[in-house]
Length: 330
Image: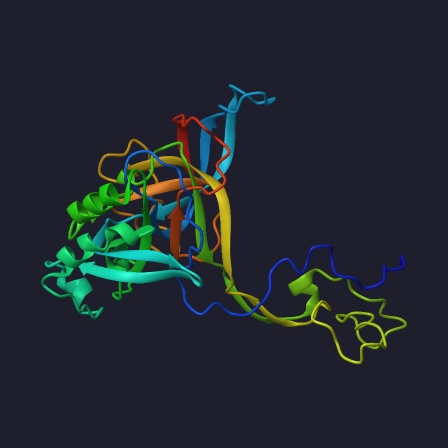
């Protein structure tokens, strides 16, 4: 039997700190791009249903497979329309952004209003218009109901999506016109475009340093333990430093992945592709209504909410619609 290498973690294992469970099940978006143009919303949300295989023509230039058939992994997201329930304006101070005003729609569906508390004055819009000169960032408050995606959850997810493009006055007028209306994913993104996805990864509980950090097993003939590190650090300082890999919570972390391409954006009543397997996806069921297929994998387990944001570091300047030949159900 060959000699095993000394137990060491792989390089870059401390890229994420702290490694603890996320406080909530929907990913947070902390950064928003400034892409200009006409006023538009920069985020939407969906629910992970399952994976498929996408057969398409490779349209990436200067690659060996350009113009040839390419089979790639795709993730199906059920994207029910989001309801615009409010507007929030922020001003920039010494400690960051400060909320200045809130405006809420008058006619909010009962399935949303009974889960959130809204305190809005009758003259809130007039006061907000007078404060627009000191507003630096405008957000629209969206509510997505998992019940429409048939996930079994009734409590809606309420989050803020940035409004960008034009002046603050133009953004405010654009957001005011959307209050109380439903916003489909096709109004926010387009087929072939890129998005950043924020989600909470699968929870795996308490795991050893082998699974958590990728350390190697120790030699079983000369060590009492096999699934531990060979050393916990130097003799000085006389404590275990935070940089030393240890066992602990694995999974259920906030993660953001960049530049995920939208391959298909359609509705199950109008689509030319069959995306639902016989009997539905495992632990999800049938996808009904609007959906998107994103190239590659996405963090999170089935039924988990996935936030999609306009890319903060886009790679493609010109959006081209992909030539998808077939969607193969795995």
